[in-house]
Image (tube, rainbow, N blue to C red):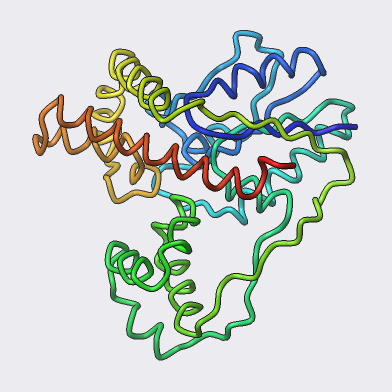
Length: 279
């Protein structure tokens, strides 16, 4: 049996291609986008629902926006789903843009032998997420950038990484041995140039606003969700909430949203090129 992994930058048509493969190889999709795992976050995150209801997409809508969700949780759930798909004689097709999710699923989660520093933890326990992020960024910005959005907003995981930095250590490298016996086919999706990245993302942001992104966020705020919630502390939602609260104009909001997505796409390319592009 084979497994397909479609990865790369945002707005490259990964999901559309994955759906084509699902039809060809009797497959089911397994999402590894850290924003699309959240319930109620549909328009801004760009969840693509297949017209063919027979094609299953796993790991959409599994976590409430108020809840944190780690790559370890993702890996455990996704692995069980993949094994079930294989057991039923179907083809798992992994698709998404969160590099940490894919690498931890396939190669395991990096570990470290640094012991707990309880004095440091006591000093940091009352710090805000923003303050902890700033501390980690100063000590090791790469370690911060490699965290997924949920982990970046989890004080316990931020403190653990600060703790590791204090010891002058880094997270141990993953083994390059894939944790599945099946053959994994890697299919990268990258934009041809920075200009195309911006063009595609600009069109996508405009389309999502037209499709009701502002209304989606207004409804979430009315239901009691806030920008501090892990699900909403993400690109698109941050900018839309600022606009809805009157802190930015429409054009300013769109410009910042596009800029943040372009920066994210650049980080995606760097990460995937490092860990997967040559597979």
